[in-house]
Amino acid sequence: MRYECNRPYISKAKTQYGKEATIGVKFSITGTVQRDSQCFSIQVIPERITFEFEDRAPDKSVTFYLEAQNIQTTSEGAFQSASVSGYGKVDGRVAFTFSGQLDDLDQPCPGAHVNLTFADRQTTLAAWMQAQGMCPSATP
Image (cartoon, rainbow, N blue to C red; front, top):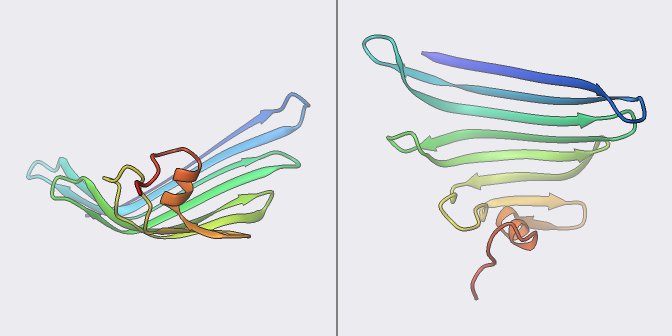
């Protein structure tokens, strides 16, 4: 059985300066649902996942977009790997892009096979996370 779920969420609020700000989240998953003999869902096998977050005010905005495909899981449904790509924007301009194979979540600092591209440099997700202090540095 094919399954598709697309859930947008938008929230509007006034800032302390009386201007309207918007936060939006979009999440979509496409995959297959396996059911048992009583038609209860026993497993969802994702094939494609997209996620977008946007925070927008009249003079500022931030957007993050992620797409995951070719998602591989264990027989128990635990994540193994996925092809990922996406971008981050600030004020409508691309600040960075990323793409690669996310296949090392069991490592202290995952993302060795996901490339990040900024305007002035390229690195891997793992190296960037280490530089930000988000996970241990690689041992020499």
